Image (cartoon, rainbow, N blue to C red; front, side, top):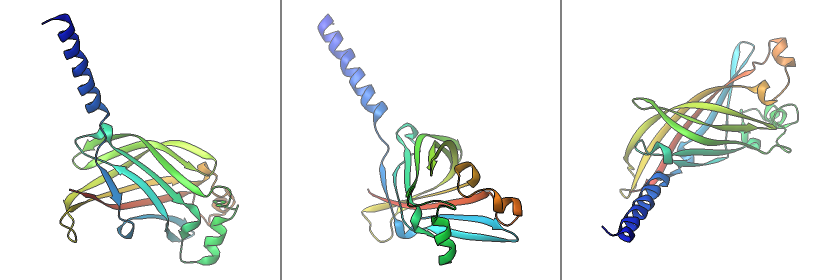
Length: 198
């Protein structure tokens, strides 16, 4: 093979390999009516539960292309709902989330790793108020099936659970924790259904 042809072949190989290496996993659109960000926190003897009504995210996932997979989310803090308006107002105030100053919480993924079976971990940075921390979030990939209401689409399911130390993110002080009335650990459940065209 002539040097020019040999060089061209090598260049073509590099282009193909690079395209494959940077190819993104398929993009899924969140179904907000069947997805949610829920939480629970101890209050003396009970558990106060709530959710955030307004959130959005980018989901790109394939078990066969974890390098091209990613999960990025943004949650509107003021959309918090614990079914108690006075408590929600307090949570939005400077006493806790200070939603006027810090209107969103975000998570930006950096890597997706397979653990075993349908269990995975997404690593990334979570920002709450003025604090950004690297975290690892375990999640279960529920699978993919044809969407029952549109045969041109398919639906995927994901469920993640994690525990966050609210004090580490400056969400409230330690006063109520020291009193034994409000826990510092918040259990978070993220349940997602997402759609894409076949």
